[in-house]
Image (cartoon, rainbow, N blue to C red; front, side, top):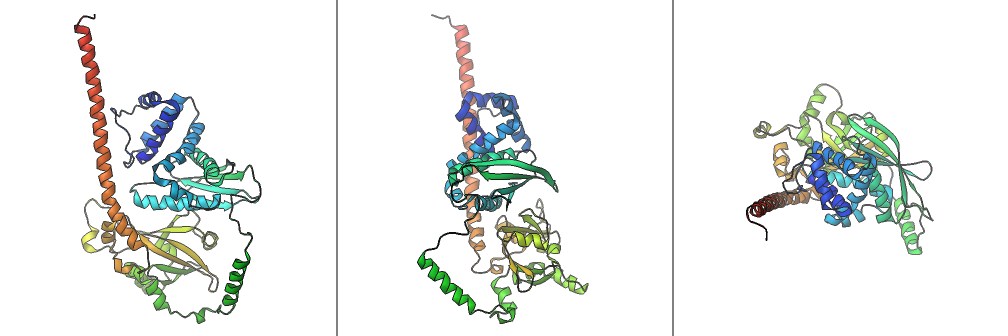
Length: 425
């Protein structure tokens, strides 16, 4: 876990119970800080987190679920105080969209903070107007945090009271899968949980929709009338894949072909069609890898990860000491192509940093000119230097705190020694 979590817990305890309670909590957990604090941008082991949570339950006299739910409620406020308020407020106009885009935000932060193992969220509508939140995490037992977050999100962003109850706890592979049923308590008029598809339309907007409808009627629905050839599309969208119901790949962008063209040559020599799941595994959302399942979640951002052996690393980078295998992730949208009963995965690559680009063999020339990933890579490279400076500053501040604590202890010992030597007046 990043120290951001531990700092949020410290903030909760000190604000509600006082600094002395936090010191007692650290003492009970067996974690010695020597007057320092947890660093927000440093990765700590899960063992440290579990020790803190266990000590919090003991010191505060709360059971584990109540303690975690209270932490979840405070965690949202802590995030707002530390620069995430504006982005959280534009994640969605309703609870379902908010939670769906929260999953996308987690994926983005995972690329910004190396080593972050964020949970994944998936939302499905319930039969009676409620929504079902599917929570996946490789850290089991922490799902009550989500209960607290969901309740505060309803109050803070949608001005409504929501009830969140755990309906199913199961496992999905090596991850915990928890299903939460979210209902609105004070529902008056339109629901804040789901998108408002049926809304009133102004006369001007109605005229615009009528005009658009008339234009669409003049367009052809036949694939052969598309005024763009396959070659042009593969150049305009260098990272895209089209696959059918059997997952057989029928089309791919030139950037992807350059990186993994050897697999197409091998499959052609073997007399078989290369399949989408031969190339990639779906990281987000956490769903079964079936054609219908993918089509059901076309409104969500998809992140796929290249399987081992898909990439041909540059020879000089393949044996880099101390480096793991290069990891290519593609992030984008699944589009259902009804005309050909296939799915178009329109995406762009995501890598940790520019060094990873070199190890993968990816160049800026592989990306489309309109692809925002170009700016994202450059910005992340710039932010990496800033983050390293912040980490060094945090460590220096912590060392000063430790020195100050040591000086205070020495001063106290000196005063006690003088008091024992010199007679009192």
